[in-house]
Length: 144
Image 1 (spheres, helix red, strand yellow):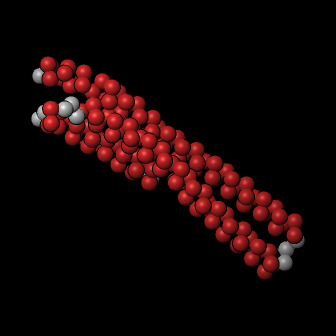
Image 2 (cartoon, rainbow, N blue to C red; image 1 turned 180 degrees about the vertical axis):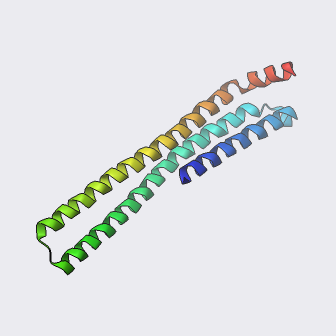
Image 3 (tube, rainbow, N blue to C red; image 1 turned 90 degrees about the vertical axis):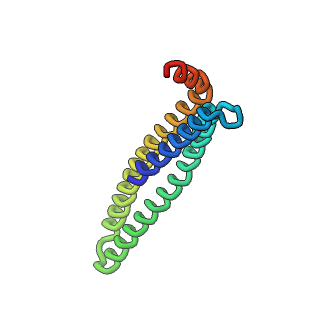
């Protein structure tokens, strides 16, 4: 859920850049074409989003390790309290570790796909605006 919200925020910022660039170009602020430059800012925003993945992955791994350690501690406490056979505790620990690994892999894959799609769309969209924004504005102004 948080990833979806952050992706929406990134795209809202990108749209704000586009709108601001378009507006500044229409009023001919400083006699410079600003719409294309907004594409550059969107590319930078896409790069920033890719750095965010590194931090999100690190936080996700730490959170999942904490959950695993809590589950292992509960298992050890149950084992010591009930004085079960030692093999049962090892089986339970292996099960907890296996569950942790599966859950971590699934969450990391979801995070990478979600943010990877965001990065790609921002980088491609920003590059197109950066490279062809002036042509797009000329076409748009001639059509109106």
